[in-house]
View: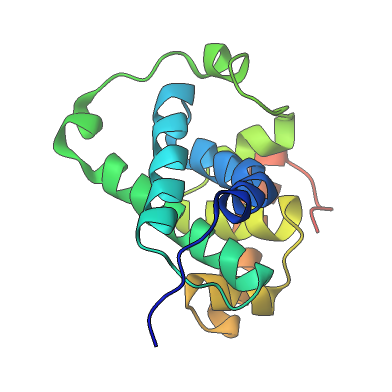
Length: 163
C-alpha cells in the first residue's frame, strides 16, 4: 500500500500543532533565532517531503522533536560552528519568540543530553515514558538523565528544592 500525500490543510494543522515546541527545542540547542528558524523550517520540510505517516499526534510530535534535535546536533557539529563566536546570550534572549526566564536560561546552558530531557519534561509536560519513546532511550536512562540534570541545576541555582 502506498503512502498517502498530505493535503495542505493537514500540513497546516501539523505545523500549527507543533511549531512552538519545535522552535523552543531548536532554540534551546542553537541559542540564536536565525539558525533556529532555519532548522524549524528544515524539520517541517523533511516531514512533508518524505510524506511521513504519523500514527497519532504523539507519534507526530515525537518524530518532529527527534528530527529537529538531530538537525540541531548536525548543525552544531559542523566544523565552522565550533569556531564561530555566538552573540552575547542576553541579546539573543530579546530576539526569542518566547519568554526565557532564569530557569530556562540555566537549562539552555546544560549539556545537550540533559537539556533535551529536562526541557521535554518540564516545559512540554511529557512523561518519562513518552520521552523515552521520543528519544528512543530506555525509561531508566531518561530517569537518570532527569536526576542528573536536576542535580546540575541545583548546584547552579544554589537551592535544595529543584523538583
